[in-house]
Length: 353
Image 1: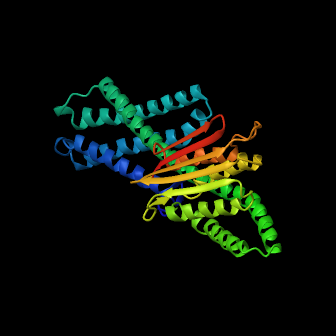
Image 2: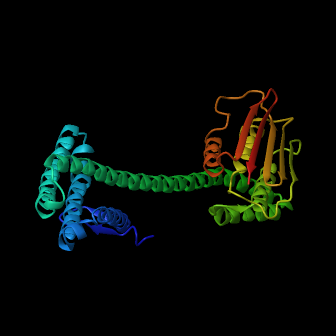
């Protein structure tokens, strides 16, 4: 693939084209030459082999000249700069030049070389050459546009992948600082109290960091690793809140053997902590339910709603990021529903893995 994309300098020009471009155009002209040789094969018997070769060579050479004059000079210099009148005038003059040379050659070939066997008509020759020229130029332009379209599709695809990677990196960078700050504060408090929870907290944080640094850089991760990461996150966040807060994670699924794009589930849970529990002081609760039926993953997250809700407490960057990633990674294979009920928030995510 890299060899096909190698750039080759054009003769008599400062421009370059890829080797893939050269191969595609060479195949096109070989096809056109083969077609024209088949069409004019009668000249071998009517005139002679030299005249047959001359007829094919002259026509193909003239078509190549006018085609690439249009593609590499008229198009970029006039048409792409919206100088339409100059462009069509230049093409018209080039076609007239082609018609003049080709028709004079045909008039000589059919009028004098094959004269006794076929009557030659200059107007008929001009008409034939005019429409055949437009046909061949149209095919050449279609080839150019097709290759440009294909190149644009590859560029769009590459940009989409790069954007997706940037989205994941942004999400990873967004989660780490604020979360780590809270966890380290909690860990500091636990070590001061010489709590037995301190080693467990360090272990869970270590597992999360390992996942973030190594596993989450892959396009797909094992579903059980994603769920373990989510479980560790919930457990570490649980230490921040009063024991009166009810926080539960219910998993009803056989996770082994399934894969998912990394960090898709975290934004919903993080959003529930950030805009739900952290805004409340009592009677707070959070429930995370995960089910897997065949290859359909269903995640339902519900949390209590603060008495007063600011306009900024409705999701934000994390959820926007999640929606974009779902659209790119699971087009037509996911459903995300967010509900703002009277006393609770509810998020339901369904993904066809």
